[in-house]
Length: 113
Image 1 (cartoon, one colour):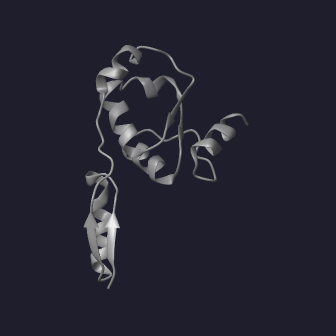
Image 2 (cartoon, rainbow, N blue to C red; image 1 turned 90 degrees about the vertical axis):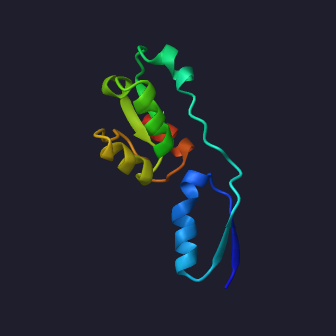
């Protein structure tokens, strides 16, 4: 079968590599991105009030929960897609908005409605 280059961050590549193996392919994992949690960058914002939080990934939800857990109790939450919405739900916070087309720009447009 095919040899497939998988460029996702290491922590995100496992499911794809596993699925490729199940199909008989040979995944080659070369992470081109590295996720770095910059919790300190959120610290000054922890007590701020926002009308909306735009969550673009499950990883972003993890960082926000760790750095500013009270932030999403006070704001409406937009999730860019269903996977992010499921992650938020698993953390006890259903998003207020998930666009029908799962792109950041679509989320912003839907917020205006």
